[in-house]
Length: 260
Image (cartoon, rainbow, N blue to C red):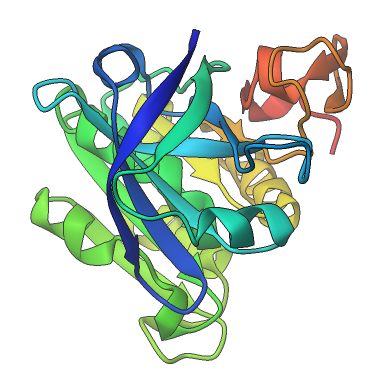
């Protein structure tokens, strides 16, 4: 990881609360792995004091750029949303551990802004896995992100929204369970890896579903991080082998390790 100032090449508002940053960095674009994140300083002074951890959404080493997809949820991201093209950002990264693609069938389950790192992962797994399936869950059609981009990769995508305005009405775990139970043969479960990112309650259900089906599962956890390198101990979670730091030991963990 390095700390550097990176220039904003593009900054788009995708919906009222979602934004996408395109940043120039030869180092991060060529070293980032799906599932890793960067810490972004959102102020030139001490207010807000702490940087914001944001998942790396995409990286293009050839163009020497990377992207951050984020949601405005507080004062820090609200400040970030005002930054204009040409401005420089103080970035620390890439941080944390990413996803490990080991099996022939990759199943990706993203809830809300959890699609941010899984879009990057989708671009990588199509190079390694023989079959890729993506499930996107959101509250409404307006908050379904990256569906077209992932479909354009040649990947099968299923969508669920809580209000039924896009895809099937219900939760992402509903359509995921339906797929695993009726469209994917149980004999193939040992060939599958399930990758998921989203709200904690959703990840718990995805992990439970994977355990029932005996499918290998990796989850990307969200946590309040301060330092991003495991020094402040502010993002500790309990695992089967003791407490670990989401920022340093994760954010990607084997689902069976987490004490939900």
